[in-house]
Image 1 (tube, rainbow, N blue to C red):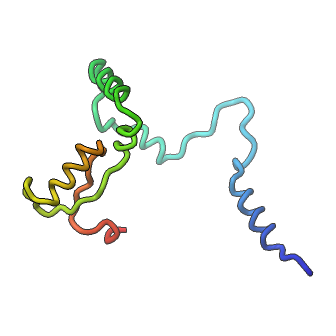
Image 2: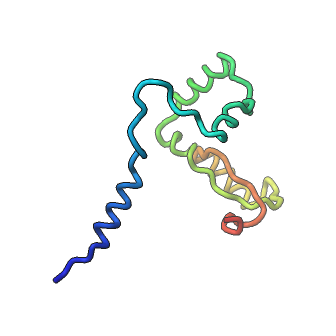
Length: 117
């Protein structure tokens, strides 16, 4: 039975796509950054640099979190952007999740997320 060359060809294409694209430059300077990268580097920062007290607060707060709380900071559920009273069941459920589970926050928008994908 003859074997198909397709799996080997697919593996070759996959591995060649992972290559660095050629040898590293020897001596001299590194190639110039692309224009889009230079423009991004020249853009002003979106926020001012933090002062020492702010950085210290961040470090202390992060060090005080348990592993569960650290993981909770990565979870940001979507909630609808319609008005919800602070006594409504929907609001109380989200508030309980944020406070009880230590969630990192919520993403509020009008419309379902998959409608924008």
